[in-house]
Image 1 (cartoon, rainbow, N blue to C red):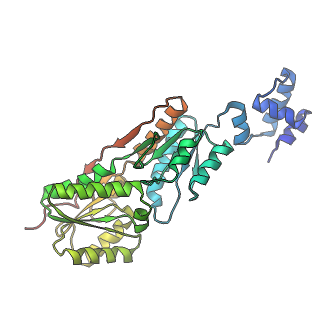
Image 2: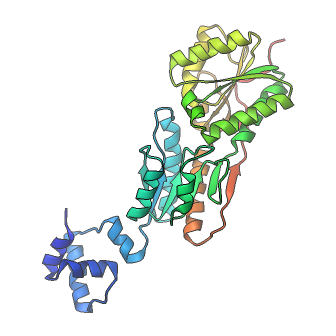
Image 3: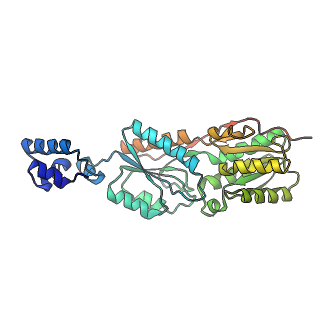
Length: 335
């Protein structure tokens, strides 16, 4: 790897002179500047992010913080990441992906190292312990998710409360009187992850509004967990006719287990899934879904970040309305 010392030797100057040419911190004669710039081009030297930051106070890098925990569906997370990468490139920015679960410490490290111009943060908790640090950082911040108290931070997400309500309303309008929610893994609820608690709130409130019997169970990402979850739900209410699945990772196992039990979808039990539209028709029965708008959320997060970088200081919270698409997995219950 070419170093600043290599450039200095080729140009016949001190390493500090090369640093001043790159940073612009001192006036350098045109002749010396040309020698250094020619050496940089000839050797293919690329200053690291910190050096570029010295020159312009900008790195043209956006950092996306998304701890890749075992209870996350990586395939869905990567749809958000891909959308953010595409949107960032349209603004001539690169995306730095930070996946280690380090809490507030990681945010402080990014800010102090000057490796990124702004932060976008996913997997937001209702009472997120990172919020005080994010407020204190001297960097623009956008959350993909909404804590209970955003405290002046900009946020964008699907309106999960309205999404939970829409799923219940759809089944109620078809005539279902007993339904259940299969939610994310228990760890997601224990962390108080914002999207899960908001969806559950919308589900419960809508069940009361529509006078529908409703229960819920968290479900880990394994076939055994799915089977045990269905055992519990069907034992608690043998008249169950509708399922809302807010856990896209368990859908293949769930549909398989229903078939093994002799329960047909939608003749015996209707299923509404919360997942990206790209997953809706990958199953034996095309699923009625409330779409997770990963592409739109990722793109809007970048656009909001660029607005913050451009000096638009007023924080905003954008909640995207849910879009329910009816397919083959929901129908009126049998009389």
